[in-house]
Amino acid sequence: MTETTPRQRARIETEAQITAIGNRMVDDDGVDGLSLRAIARELGVVSSAVYRYVKSRDELLTILIRDAFTQIADAVDEALAEHRSVETLALTMLDWSRSHPNRWALIYGTPIAGYEAPREETVVPGTRIMIALASLVAESTTDTEAANGAGSAQGAQSSEVQELSATLEPLRRGLDELGLDYDDSVILETITIWVAVIGLINGLRFGQFGPGFGDVEDDLMSGVVGRLGA
Amino acid sequence: MTETTPRQRARIETEAQITAIGNRMVDDDGVDGLSLRAIARELGVVSSAVYRYVKSRDELLTILIRDAFTQIADAVDEALAEHRSVETLALTMLDWSRSHPNRWALIYGTPIAGYEAPREETVVPGTRIMIALASLVAESTTDTEAANGAGSAQGAQSSEVQELSATLEPLRRGLDELGLDYDDSVILETITIWVAVIGLINGLRFGQFGPGFGDVEDDLMSGVVGRLGA
DNA sequence: CGGTAAACGAGAGCGGTGCTCTCGGAATTC
DNA sequence: GAATTCCGAGAGCACCGCTCTCGTTTACCG
Image (cartoon, rainbow over all chains, first blue to last red):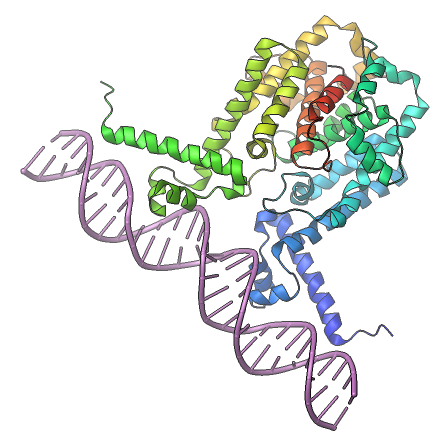
């Protein structure tokens, strides 16, 4: 059974080559540098032949996006297995963004114009890290529950969170589907840390803070995560 | 003196038309929808004629980017004149991003491939909001200095901030050039709020949290800003 | 074993892009 | 009035995604 004909093996090989070349092109020149014609040239084949393996540029994009999400989530999981902390998660993401800036932009930057990622293909790998963060936050708030209320000077936090309950509904629904059930305070905390981490990495990668960083990125990330009390 | 010939007036008019059409194209179809050929068609002119007014697509991009930075900074200034608070700043940015999602992506999203914004043209309008945020943070920390240390449970914040002094150097230099001099704690606080606000807006605009928000964006932003203690 | 069907590569072609160059006419300057 | 600058038209180059047809090779199946 499951014998592979030469043709099948060749097809798998070609598909792997196409995604590998595609990944390299994104790494080198960003998503705009991804060209099916150029891939064809590199394969030593006429341009139309590539369409035997990939329906369209968008389909290739979906493959590369799912790849990237999986890669960074794997990196985070591996690092967390070593040491479970929000800082580890943040620094691992930052490090991955440094090694693959264009792939980072592919998944966390501006969506590609005219392209809509098929949710069923990309949602699962795309949410792995955020789910890991939520569980980290849930753990730490259980540990030091008393320290939680100290952040707000007015002591109005609990009522604030209550007001937010309806606001957080969409996200809670998403977590529910995965069998996760967290407090509103945990969800809000998770979102806050998440957007700060992504925002900082984007700012660094996209050069919005000007030049001059580079060797102190990690310290800055640690500072921000520390300031967030995580 | 300063007489304007018909030709000069016509040129100014045409330049204004080009940037207006360009802005509309970005609004409609994102930066990838910006096409000099399409602008030429809309002007009822052959494509090469546009190059009499704009050296290249990149030059037009620079104009549009500076425009967008100026617009959003004006909106924030106006709102802050009404009510000075970090929340006002954040909600105004969020609101502007909602009205001009593609222009938002133009300035705070992935940098355009192969395009480098000339710093002398875009830095000044691009940093106005962050400077306003820094002054807001400075004001509020002077008001309630005691509440500042409560965020960290270990009480290690002051030494943490000291460690960061070198890390924050690049940003402090930027502020120095503008004649501003803030504490490290103020700078770190400013960065933290900044990246969280930008990160949240990007997440909402770029659809990274999935659908289902829309009418509760403002509440979510208020929640995050509140959680940050601002 | 031989016929049929599927997979595949080549090539031409369509419409789109940014950008360059040349040419002739019109407006401005001297 | 002449010289200079400005400006639109048009052709052309190299790229892109994508489609269609055509001949060949491979796989399957009675």
